[in-house]
Each structure stands twice: as C-alpha cells, then as structure tokens.
Image 1 (cartoon, helix red, strand yellow):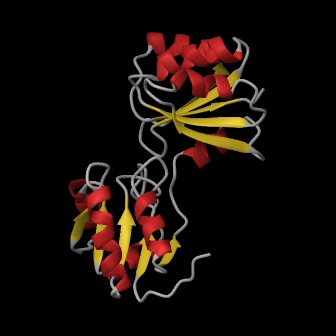
Image 2: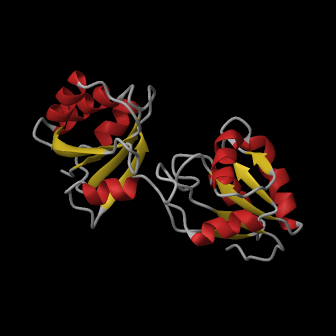
Length: 228
C-alpha cells in the first residue's frame, strides 16, 4: 500500500491528438504553473505550448532515456517540484512513455494527478458502431516476436477489441486478424481523428483490407474489432 507524502506533484496532462482546440482550460493552467514540462519530444511540445502562449522549461523523457532519468525526476518531485508530463499527442502512458515515472513517483509517495482529456481510442470506439459497454484495449500488436501468440489469445475474446496500428502495417494486420477471427468478423477503422482528413470506415476485416490495398493508408489508425 502506497501513501502520498511527498511535497511535489506530478500532473499527467493530455494534449490534442489533432485539433488544437481539444485542450481543457485546466490543462492550460497546469502547463502554465508547472516548474517544468516533461515531454516525449520537446520540439513537438514546444510548438504546442508556443501556440497557447505558454513558456516553460522542458525535460526530455522518451523511450530511449526514461530508465536513466526517472530516478532523478522522482528525487526532484519528492523535494517539492511540480511537473507536467505530456506526450506528443493524447494521454501520457497510453502506448507512450509515462508508466515508469508514474510507478516510481507513486512508490515514493508523490501525489499523481491525471487530467481528463484527449485520447484516440475512446472516440474511435464510440464511433465504431460496435458494442462499447465492455471492451479490451490492446494497443499495438507486437511487430515480430509474440505477434501470432497475441492474436491467437484473442480469437475467443467476447469483448470489442481496440488496437493502434501504423499505416505501414494496417493491411497486414487486417489480413492476419481475418485469418484468425474469420472473414465475417466486423470491424471499424478510424484514422486522423480530429484532423482535416478524419475518416471512419466500417465493414468486415477483409473488406477493410481490400479498401486499403487500393487506397494507400495514411495517418494514424485505431482499429476496433467485434468480439467473438
């Protein structure tokens, strides 16, 4: 059991996934008041804060350095500093860096607050037309090792499944899921959510694969697949 006792505070701040209007007033205030902003890519977050007229120091925190800098960040939090953690887009720690820092901060009694806000899978799921009262978020499938095993484990999953996928692998993923789940399994794909070319397509897994074989896939994809 962890007890919050440290003087600082870690805020997890969702940032827009496309449309820059999708930020809350509270998120802007937290970013303005933080001692520093912990960012996945300081260049991306720098442009975002500049758009809102916010100027704060940045600390780089990404997949290549999070193991090295987490302890030092927690030391500063325990000492009383207040940090805002952001990712390039969406909510930190959802298929993005953040979990290690949150776990370490909680272990040391640091108060952690997660603000509500933008994330890609919720609008994609609600817009899919598939049951969303119960679902499982799978994130990105393994690229190589463990990929077939993960898909096989999901064959009998009764809940709607939500995946993230890149444009380079979406067709492959659709074919592999169709082979495992059956050609009649219904699915929905949302891409470029909140952006100018936002699009949602619905159909069977093979139908969606056939569409993107003709129309080169672009953007970031959220794939929702009906449960068994």
